[in-house]
Picture (cartoon, rainbow, N blue to C red):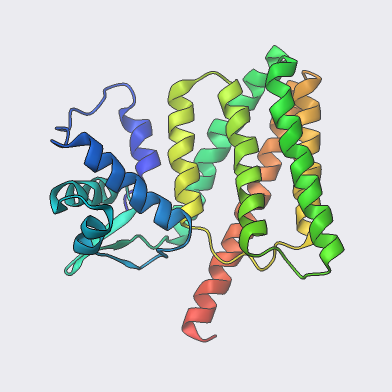
Length: 253
């Protein structure tokens, strides 16, 4: 599968001159709608994409929908089949490459952020996200449920990813931010069931975020980079374990 985030890295210095769709408004609507359906879990990996039903549901012609589907195929989010297009199914290597890209970009960016000793205006929303992670973990522990599910799970995922994106934004490199945004979207799309999101795991994520932000606040560049790198590598290990469990379940092992 083509990894769009990797391709951006190869072409940032010379923007592609791909012809723009004739109806940018309808194209953008279709593109955003398909992405939101995938990110929300309404279209899972392997699900077929119906050009007709999308056009009917959005009240637009099939042409911009077809163009949006073509763009998402180029981005690696959809795959073309003999019957049309389906949501791309990740391979183990896809997941590894995406996380390696995340680590390379985010660790570099946080080094820049920590070296600058960011202002309270930058730190305050990050502090709020760290606190929200703590609250979600405490709520799960109090509920006596084995793990997060439904809205609570989505709330935590959003909180986690927002924390990482705000740190990257603070680095001030817009091209890097664009690459990471694409990568994070792919990681959300490729997310597998997260039954293992226990109170213990949430507590560990909170502690990592807390220590990372403390290091940034104190201007401890080396420590911030070390902690973030470790945090991302642990996340990769968890994602690969989920992937392997999913593969074993599908094979009936």
